[in-house]
Image (cartoon, rainbow, N blue to C red):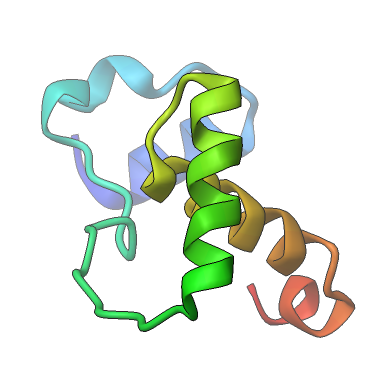
Length: 80
């Protein structure tokens, strides 16, 4: 099937997923990239206390809190 036919089917509301290999789909920009951040000791202690309370790793808390803040920032929402 050519791109024109696929576009037409999509525009007409037909299901076009059968024409894609879903096992190879990738969402760009989601690949992890390692960074290094230095925190003051009091902040690490607070993060460790919260991670123990929740039973999750410190990194998971940091990722969650950063994502929460970014989601709540209007300028970030309009750029994506």
